[in-house]
Image (cartoon, rainbow, N blue to C red; front, side):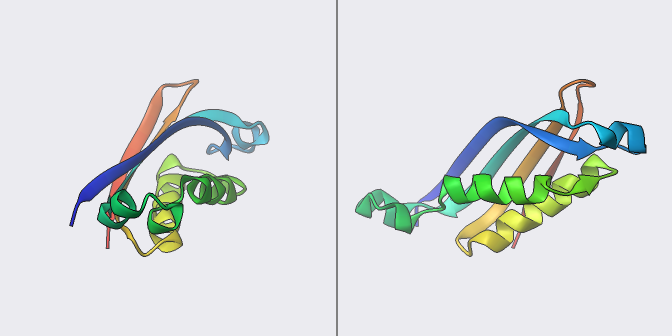
Length: 112
């Protein structure tokens, strides 16, 4: 086994906030994700089918961000759960979300 950490760090737009006014306009959030997975097969084969596809990860993020959230905690929980569900090779995931305007955020870690 060769354990690896795949990572993504990008800016997204989300409807998040405790008031309707706050959720009325999308807010810029920075999402950092680290996925722990066995990369041995992918390292040998050099084949995308043998690893967690980061394009699929971006789709999962877009699906979750299509919803409205009151709390950043719920957004992080939903996103980490979706990532664990998207590929059985994901052993654990860390999701950090920061609201760019307020520089507040959360980091959650989940495993199988």
